[in-house]
Image (cartoon, rainbow over all chains, first blue to last red; front, side, top):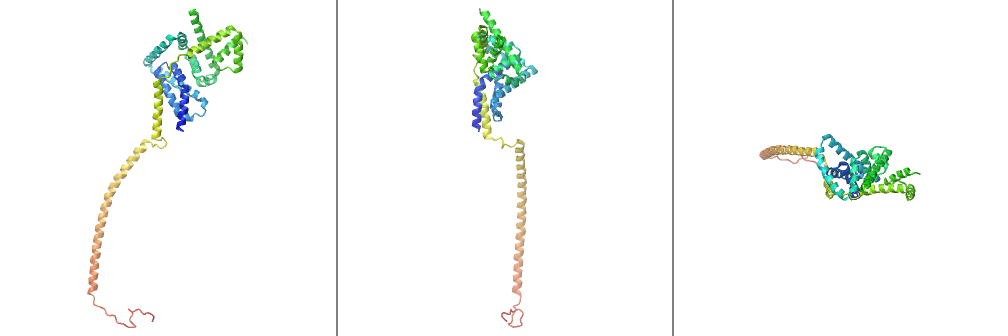
Length: 172
Length: 162
C-alpha cells in the first residue's frame, strides 16, 4: 500500500515539478520562497494523495495549493513590510534571468512584458502555460468566470505579440 | 468567417481549447490567408520563446522533498500513529506506576511485620499446647488404675449379639 503511494507520488511529481516550480517562481519572484512553496505543495500532496479520489483533479489540486501558498506569501510580505528581505532574493532571480536573457533577447522582451502587466492578467497566462488546464479549470481555481479567463488570456497574448512585432520593427 | 473570428480561433488553438473540426477549419483558412498566417506565426513565436530555455528543477529541492518524505516514512514505520498514545497519557501512566510502587513497598514492610507478629503468636500457642499436653499426660498417668469387671450388667461393656 505504502509502495503504491510512493510510486503514484513520484509519477505525479515528475510530471509537474518543473512547471510548478517555474509557475511559483514567476509569481513570488524569489527562488528561496519558490523552493519552500514547491516543497510544501509536494509534501501536502504526499500526505493527501490517498484522499484525492479523482486523479484527474490532481493537476488542479497542485496548482491551487501552490497558488494559495504564493498568495499567502505575497500578502505576508505586504503586511509585514518585509520587502527589504525579499529584495535580496529578487535580485538573485533577476541576475539569473538576466544571464539567461543575454542569450535570448526575445524571451527577455516577453518576460519583461509579463512582469510589467497587471498580475491578474499575467497569472492567467502563467497558469495556462504551466498547468495546461482548461478555461473552466482555471476559472474554478481563480474563482472567476470562464469568459474572464478567456478574455485575459487573449489580452496577454495580444500584448506579447505586439511586443515581439515591435522588436522585429526595431531590428529592421 | 472573417479574419477576426479566425484570430479568436488562433488564440483558442494556443490555449489548447480548439476542437478537431475547428482546427481543420483554421488551418484551411491559414493556407489561404497571408495576414492570418503571419498572425499565427507571431503567436506561435510567443509560445515558443516563452517555453524555451527554462532552467531545470533545482536538484537540492528534489533532495529536500524526498528527504522529508523518507523521514515521514521512517517515523510511520517505527511509530505507528494509530497506536501512539498522547504524551499526557504516557506521563500519567508513569506517575501511576511510581505511586503503586511506593505503596507496594510500604505494604511489603507492613505485611512482613504482621507475619512476624503472627509467627510469634503461633509459636507461643504451640508452646502453650505442648505445656497443656504434658500436663494432661501427667494427670492421666497419676490417675488410679480402674478395674473393669466383666459382667453382663456392666453398662461399659458392649453387648454384641446378645
